[in-house]
Image (cartoon, rainbow over all chains, first blue to last red):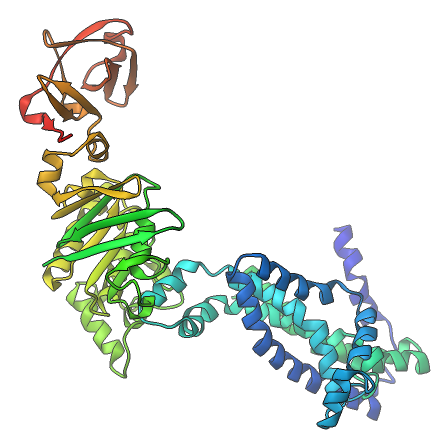
Length: 241
Length: 294
């Protein structure tokens, strides 16, 4: 019980603290919300499209190559985000080879919307892949085998059997990665400070206006980030139909 | 008309087998003998060399594969499962006709997880038949069923496969199931040790391993020939072959006596009626003795 009370303190702080009477969002706050939502949505689509095949490979293919691949997924997840930000700046910055190559085709990968998406990808894709791997690994192999004998190619089996059976777990994985993408601060601080997303905007507002003044934006931030994973988490647990 | 199978596997178990599938064929082997691996190889789910179909991917092989637990897709209804391999706008109607034809029409709308073990096996067979396979592969189809359901299921499976003229290869470790097959294949030590008409194989096992697979606990030399007889068919008599009891144990309603290399189940006796070291006389009814062809 004490632990639950302890864990609820931030929530109580949200309800009881802050200057709610002067609740007002500045133009910069609104722009930050737009940046976070748009960048997060683009990142989420890319994460699902690119991460799912990797997760499936990790779930289904045993062996050393697969283990190395999983390690490559885990490393950015375990690395401090500030460190990733610095390393990304040295790879995707305008002076770095990759960054320069992208810049030549008009895609600037620092302090741009593309950089925000890039930061979200590095922050959230490993989380998605690891969670999706667990979800896909829970689908018994025998269903896929039977589907093959019923005339389906491996890709058709994936879409007709594996994906439907893993959909709840994959949805939870996406929700987790959404939270990571929305809340990412360390990486965006280095490579996508502008245009500011919600975390950076909150940071700027805290410095300029103080903690109490940022509660409206903070509440909005939490409203965007939390409900989906919370609902999916409870649904997976069986608390909701 | 039968199908000649010649297959070689390396993993997960080394097998080199050649046999015929004729009508309802039982593949009898002990647990771990490679029955499931062989069925999976025939279905294209394990790498193997041989014929038929070894060069084809699973989706192009004309086989219907039923794993042990039926493996109906849990996100679909019974009808959805049967319609799974079908294509075209009328696939659901075709699946319904198939279910009706197998007497399973009432199950069509039921979600797969709500079906009983027997119902799931029947729907799984309907699903496998939907592709009009040239061979059905059934892996321990009655493993999860009680004895009554098992008998009903086997009778139904035989009737349905015979009606449609589809040969079936049924992997089992149970001689009681093998006894019902038209053709019997015995698998041991990575090869086929005997095959033939069910009655012939049961009457004349080729060696001790075959006899034991077929459920004969006793294989021994008797009056100049090698014989096999079930423990329950040996009689304790006033005279006959004398053996000194090495072990006596109660097994439900029976008492199992062991001695002289023989195992004898005596029905209706109590363990107190016998003791180790005691000499008893055994009689082997001629009609129960089977010749073993060494």
